[in-house]
Image (cartoon, rainbow, N blue to C red; front, side, top):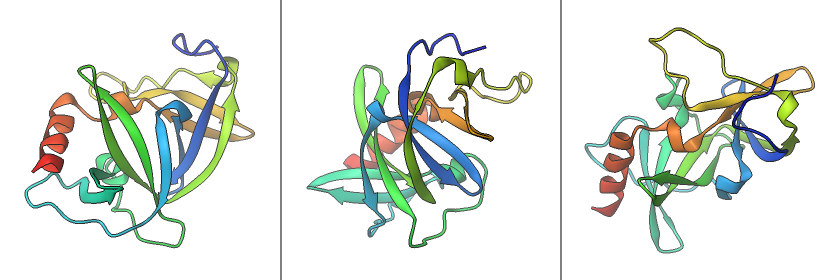
Length: 162
């Protein structure tokens, strides 16, 4: 049984956070950067690690591990920043997302993607598009446009502009 919203084969960039594998639609990924100097911005949410200078543009950097209730991302030789485009109210916001490591780009057929688990009404799983299967592993396919609330994105955008 495939997810209703996914009707064609799509390429996904897979990456690791802790021991879990996640994926973004490659259409939302701009580039992958080596971990660089991140400038901390005062009075921002804990999951916002700071901002980077990306060819003259200020780009907020998010630690998804913190946003998902995991431990803070550690700097290792494999740690990188995935630069993604997020849609908010018809506007595109560029964000950097910390990842423990980038795995590969994979194509997934709709019949290899299951709906996200129903975990009751108290847990928000709207940001999970589906659970992809690659060999014996599950990959959580994230909808980057829904990972952050509109308020969080507005706050991040305001922090980057200051």
